[in-house]
Image 1: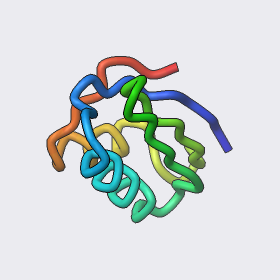
Image 2 (image 1 turned 135 degrees about the vertical axis):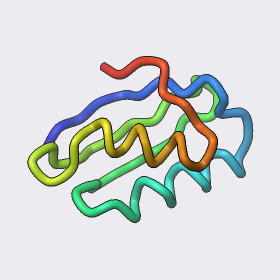
Image 3 (image 1 turned 120 degrees about the horizontal axis):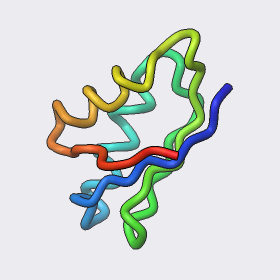
Length: 71
Protein backbone atom coordinates (compact mmCIF):
# COMPACT_ATOMS: atom_id res chain seq x y z
CA UNK A 1 0.00 0.00 0.00
CA UNK A 2 1.12 3.51 -0.72
CA UNK A 3 0.19 6.64 1.28
CA UNK A 4 0.16 9.98 -0.47
CA UNK A 5 -1.31 13.43 -0.08
CA UNK A 6 -2.95 15.08 -3.07
CA UNK A 7 -3.33 18.85 -3.34
CA UNK A 8 -6.73 19.73 -4.82
CA UNK A 9 -7.16 23.54 -4.76
CA UNK A 10 -10.83 23.49 -5.76
CA UNK A 11 -11.93 21.74 -2.54
CA UNK A 12 -14.08 24.31 -0.78
CA UNK A 13 -16.98 22.64 1.07
CA UNK A 14 -18.46 19.52 2.63
CA UNK A 15 -20.14 18.61 -0.66
CA UNK A 16 -16.69 18.58 -2.29
CA UNK A 17 -15.48 16.30 0.50
CA UNK A 18 -18.34 13.84 0.01
CA UNK A 19 -17.96 13.78 -3.77
CA UNK A 20 -14.21 13.20 -3.70
CA UNK A 21 -14.28 10.57 -0.95
CA UNK A 22 -17.10 8.58 -2.54
CA UNK A 23 -15.52 8.78 -6.01
CA UNK A 24 -12.15 7.50 -4.82
CA UNK A 25 -13.52 4.83 -2.47
CA UNK A 26 -15.46 3.26 -5.35
CA UNK A 27 -12.21 2.50 -7.19
CA UNK A 28 -10.81 -0.99 -6.70
CA UNK A 29 -7.43 -0.67 -4.99
CA UNK A 30 -8.27 2.39 -2.88
CA UNK A 31 -8.22 1.55 0.80
CA UNK A 32 -8.73 5.03 2.27
CA UNK A 33 -9.53 8.53 1.03
CA UNK A 34 -9.90 11.35 3.54
CA UNK A 35 -10.47 14.94 2.45
CA UNK A 36 -9.20 17.87 4.51
CA UNK A 37 -11.34 20.78 3.31
CA UNK A 38 -9.40 23.47 5.22
CA UNK A 39 -6.06 22.49 3.68
CA UNK A 40 -7.45 21.38 0.30
CA UNK A 41 -5.79 17.97 0.52
CA UNK A 42 -6.77 14.36 0.08
CA UNK A 43 -4.98 11.75 2.19
CA UNK A 44 -4.99 8.58 0.14
CA UNK A 45 -4.00 4.98 0.80
CA UNK A 46 -4.06 2.81 -2.31
CA UNK A 47 -2.44 -0.21 -3.93
CA UNK A 48 -0.37 1.01 -6.90
CA UNK A 49 -0.21 -2.56 -8.22
CA UNK A 50 -4.00 -2.51 -8.66
CA UNK A 51 -4.61 1.10 -9.67
CA UNK A 52 -2.14 3.71 -10.94
CA UNK A 53 -2.15 7.23 -9.56
CA UNK A 54 -3.05 8.54 -13.02
CA UNK A 55 -6.36 6.63 -12.84
CA UNK A 56 -7.18 8.23 -9.49
CA UNK A 57 -6.32 11.69 -10.79
CA UNK A 58 -8.47 11.08 -13.90
CA UNK A 59 -11.42 9.99 -11.73
CA UNK A 60 -11.16 13.23 -9.75
CA UNK A 61 -10.93 15.26 -12.95
CA UNK A 62 -14.09 13.59 -14.27
CA UNK A 63 -16.05 14.90 -11.26
CA UNK A 64 -14.54 18.38 -11.51
CA UNK A 65 -11.46 18.33 -9.27
CA UNK A 66 -7.91 18.65 -10.59
CA UNK A 67 -4.86 17.52 -8.64
CA UNK A 68 -2.02 20.06 -8.70
CA UNK A 69 0.52 18.14 -6.61
CA UNK A 70 1.04 14.76 -4.97
CA UNK A 71 3.52 13.72 -2.29
